[in-house]
Image 1 (cartoon, one colour):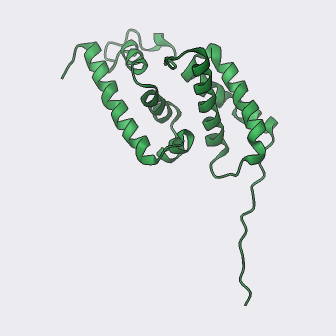
Image 2 (tube, rainbow, N blue to C red):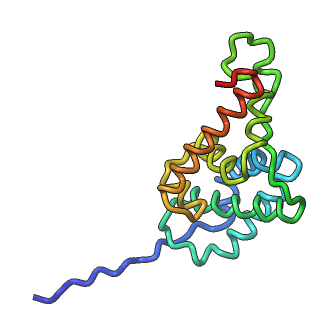
Length: 173
C-alpha cells in the first residue's frame, strides 16, 4: 500500500473587482463607525488597495470578510495615527431616533460620551463585538490577539462603559 499524502491546495483568491463589488459597503460602514463618514472613504479605498497588493498571499485561513475587515481595522488605526494621537471617536447613527423616548435604557449622548472615553483597545472590541457582530474567534483573528484576550478586553470594556454611563447619569453604585 502506498501512503496517500494530502496536499493542501491553496484556494484561489477572488479578483479585486469582485471583492470591491461584494464588500465595499461593509468595509465603508466599518470604517465610518471608527473614523466618521468623512474619513471612511479614504480608509475604505486604502483597504482595497492593500487587499489588492496582498491578494496573492491570501491563504483562505479565514473568511474573505474577516480578512478584509482585518485590513480595514489596520487602515483605520494607521489613518488615526497620522491624523491624531488620541484615537477615533465613536459616531452613533441618527441621534434623533431615540430623542423623545423617555423609557430609553441609556441616553444616546451618554453612551457616545462613555464609548469615546474608553481606551482605544476597549472601544475597538466593543465596536467589533456589538456593532459588527463577529464571533470571538473572528475578533481574535482581526486584532491578532488570543481569544482569551478578546474576552478579557470585552469584560473590562463593559465594566468601564457601565461605570462611565452610571457616573454621567448620576447613578453611581
